[in-house]
Image (cartoon, rainbow, N blue to C red; front, top):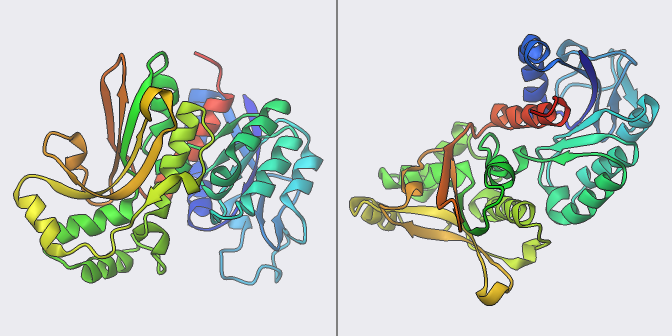
Length: 344
């Protein structure tokens, strides 16, 4: 059995789902993979839950409760980097903080600190990866560490697994994706007769859309995900400034229903396409008419999908995957397993 110390940064919906999934899967992880993950700390901006022994959910306060009152495991002012340094190399950071697509913080500092301490990292948040992926990959490699971020590209949909592993040897010649469950749900419901405001409110009432949905409906969440998929699969270093972005605001229910009657669908489609003669790729996010022959036309509700167009393997499309905190937690767990399990 291999004991794997973990430090979790961020204790929101995804962080809590991850700890719950670890507890649920503990026996399976040991039996199938010989792994015993041990959460040694859960970090927030104010400090860490850390006691020197593995933590369980019952040792933590929930978000919104008083952090410093009555919990013997809370260490005010203790940083994740300090915990990692004290534990020594070989563990894995689980990065679940809220993304900032402009600065990359706080995830950028957490990931950098982990790599300098000889720790691997898995990430569900996008900010640090959007801002500094090439530098983070270089820092990880320089310290003998591994960075994986399946959960940051489409929750449980295995975009990177396919693009980096399953398509090995093929040249990727284009990518199309529906990568945001919130906007896809809204457009699906508009096709069923709701106007934009009604569909958005329904999504918020069901917990599908955030109270402030600007990043989703404005197309920026989709842009960040397509940027990460493109940079990871093509080994490029494009930035958000290289992505043309238009969201779904202003689309009428009439447009969406008219497309549906013709067997087509309006989707917030992300595309990456090569320039002529090996020039720079164009990255684009915008509401698009998807034809009946395109397998992405059938991706509805909160589901996501992606198509890789290749030179030797044809077009490969993936759809489905949980689009919620449990799905993101499952992607984090998958990445940890693939870092530590024996090669096969």
